[in-house]
Length: 204
Image (cartoon, rainbow, N blue to C red; front, top):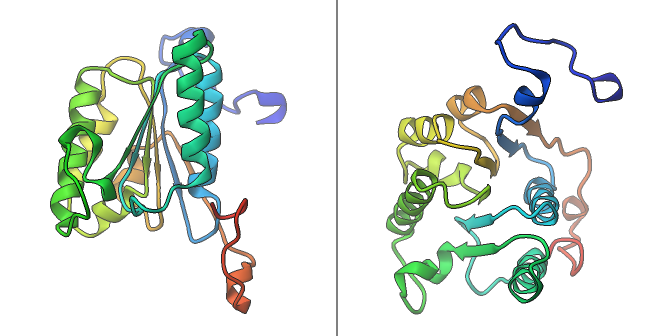
């Protein structure tokens, strides 16, 4: 893509402006570090454009509050106070999902993941958000906690102008096929390979 210009112009009857506005289904996968980090960076860009951002974390523990959550929730508060940027909604499966009002640790992770996906489906049908970050959602797909065919059809055929980014290793081939933009994070080196654990400001 030299100078940001596409290499191919499809014969789809759309103008350049119309084609540029088509919403994307994006996948960040691979064994390298940076899949979620890139997705949350995308969410910050979307917030700056005034988009409504919905984050759904499917694996991380409720006790682990990553730095991006604090930043994006503060940006959501800033929007509420000043109108700057856009609204931000953050849901985390380990907390039992915010809309279900469950307390404490949940043990049936498969049921929680299915409930989270059902809420994502409802939100997509209602065109609730401009950008959905489905963080670590490849794992419920891989583990059979959600129906892959239903996931792919819902994300591929979503109405309106809704952008979606899915993160996690080993993205299902059907999801990769349906996506508009796929990035495979390839690990070249990682400090954990030599016994160095994650660090504040880098991993969280």
